[in-house]
Image (cartoon, rainbow, N blue to C red):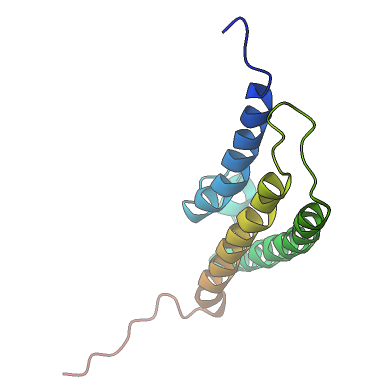
Length: 133
């Protein structure tokens, strides 16, 4: 612990990025991101659904931009053979690839959340389907 190897900080940094980016989609899926809902909880159901729809669409748009730019960065690292200037010499394509992969998963979850908000927005979420029997 008092004399870490020269590449341990590099590896720890990459793992931290992995945990943050890849875990974001899972946190979104379980509705586990930190937020303040005091005012939203007091709003009518349709307005809450509209906010959820808007949040999902804005989040998905943000993720599309990060997938696009992260993909460009990843392809350039692959094309130019970029490596970390350390003893380990990790090819940068691997840590860079975490960005488009993680944000694609998060963007997909935002789209799923937006689609889930649509029935609540139109008022069809609480209607029972008639029985056929």
